[in-house]
Amino acid sequence: MFDQLTGRIAGRFARVEPRRHATALVLGLLADLPRKNCWTLAEHAGDSTPDGMQHLLHRAKWDADAVRDDLRAYVVEHLADDEAVLVVDETGDLKKGTATVGVQRQYTGTAGRIENSQVAVYLVYSAACGHAAIDRALYVPRSWTDDLDRCRTAGIPEDLTFTTKPVLAARMITRALDAGTPARWVAGDEVYGDNPHLRAALEDRRTGYVLAVSSTHQVTTVAGKFPAKAIVAKIPKRAWQRRSAGAGAKGERYYGWAQADIHGPADRPGHWWLLVRRNRRSGELAFYRCFSPHSVPLSDLVRVAGRRWTVEETFQAGKGLAGLDEHQVCRWTSWHRWVTLAMLAHAFLAVTAAAERRDHPAPDDLIPLTCNEIQRLFTTLTSRAHDLAHRLRWSHWRRRHQARARDCHYRRQAAAQP
Image (cartoon, rainbow, N blue to C red; front, top):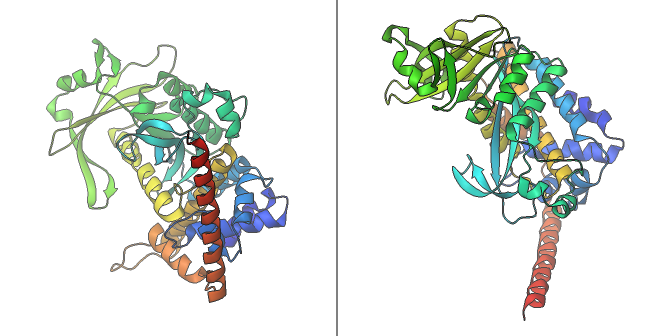
């Protein structure tokens, strides 16, 4: 299965050297390495220096967007589901300094606070048998787009302008649907649900959505316009239903759910609802604005709302198993290439796990194979034992490189002294 995947993208590389390095890099991303960067991946691959890996990410001629399209086709081919959900969400990677493309002090859910970080929006294909990221877009803040010299240094295209996260999400969703990706629904958090332009774009395409909205989000009912939190008091007790939002690590996630009819744009056909989720213990409420071209039962809306959590599982697996966040690259092209290959590595795990669960169901005394277990088994089967001379050569290379970097820093520091 791994050979089939790498064979699918082989034609995207004009020369054999970057093609081999791409395969070695993906193998390294799937390996059980404590850190995953060009140095460790090159050592794992048996190279004598990281030059080949760095060339692959920076100067080699290949199109990361074309590989992304191959990745999307690969995921859809193996996980295709007419009831699939396209889930959009952003995640941040904590970074030091100011040179890495897109970095600034901004809020990131990874840290739960404002930190120096790099934020990207991802699109996840979430089907009944598995889920994997199929697209990505780097969020470039105004502090970057307003500084042309800074953008030029980082290799950002000259025609790039500031774009909000919902607009980035809309572009990725449009790209996936235009490519024929089978998906009936879109899900996302408040950043996307509160954006009227994203909702309008989905309604124009007759694509259903269940998007989280804030408690102050305004909705229109037969009685007038109200914030979402005001609708709760008008919902009768008999309208609340106990339903599961899907299986979690500790069992089914049961909540109280209710829906209320709301009005959408007068010039668009369809059905709109406000979906309310209530925690059965704390009473905490969450709100979702929903749309469907056709009337659907509450159970469908609850299923889609619960499927949104698969994006968090994708981020956790992509970072923990495939080094999605461990890149040490500063430029626009290098970031897109690293992230695309990391998404490819995770997709391989997700597809393999789904295939094993389908073709070889686990006995009752074993849980089905997970991405984590597939990664462990794959690493064992493909591990390469390098001799002592190879290890010593890399130790010498690292120490020499670090000595040069130290001397460079000291000279720069001395030159800055009055």
